[in-house]
Image (spheres, rainbow, N blue to C red):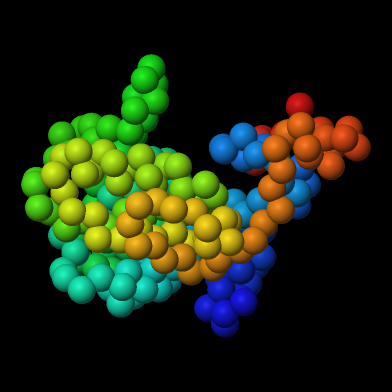
Length: 197
Ligand code: ZN
């Protein structure tokens, strides 16, 4: 693991954001641990620090100026805002339509054809949310230069259709429910952030 990734994980440990147990992730997969970014990002100084670091990596990756940072709500809101602050750009966010689950720009947010955008999320597991944001932006004519996240839980394998960076890349054990060893042992599964059922 890189020194940068170590220092990011140290920050998670120090703020109680590294959880152990039996978790059902948004992707539907089960995992024995979970990084709860909200617990790190509740500290504005930590959020600012992570945002600066991610902005620096994104800047190093893209050859042209970034016009906008866009993140999927809710997870991407705080870190996306901090990256935008560090890059000196506006910040927009997308939301899923509650009925169609389609990722949308609402609240009067618009992008113009040709706008150069980076997409920022807190954690990438399968890359699904980031990919949906990228698709929404492409449909609006924007040029998505890159995507970034604080944590990459995919071990670097998630493909979001554009170049991607993460402050810490982890190979986290995830299981489909029918193959989950913790389920087999009868350990109650919880959605991260909620109490055991
Ligand atoms: Zn399980």
